[in-house]
Length: 241
Image (cartoon, rainbow, N blue to C red; front, side, top):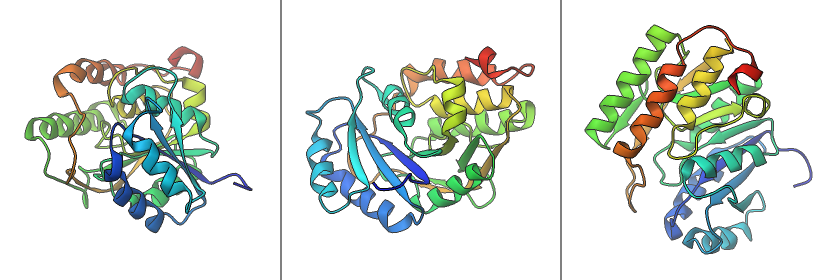
């Protein structure tokens, strides 16, 4: 890529194979900002790699990264965000649940100065279609209570579909090592530093093919850690790290 992209789009993927093709099609059709797209896998043998390599022959903005920090979505997201070349990184899923049309809006909000821009299922104009009832109920309660009680700036702190200032991320670090709790971690850290967080409405659709890798029972304690962290006095970046 000859010039720095305005947004780095990070997609953690695990054995998606051909399922990722329509996701990439929608992404490149929707995003108008100059971008790089980083598909992050845990192993060079992952079935997603060969599909991404074939796709990249016609789309030079796309490449894959093999995460060397260890297995799991949190480590893959962390690896991709820290490798981003753009001043804004947007995390979106490989399962097609997220609406790629929101990526430009999220990136532009971050360019205007917010540390975290969230795609919100729970604000007016947003919606969640399908998915686990229990997961949705817990997520909705967490997001709305954090906004009201901790003033996090978004009704959807748990959604992984967010844009981040890469400068902010590098200043505070990423501690998550297991599931998809990075979204709530960085939102909570921004709140404790009293940095601006904003949101735009999004419609989330449950994946139409493949199997979800979300493990609710295993990851709830990780989310709770960052839920409680959002409450408290102002901290500096060094204190947050």
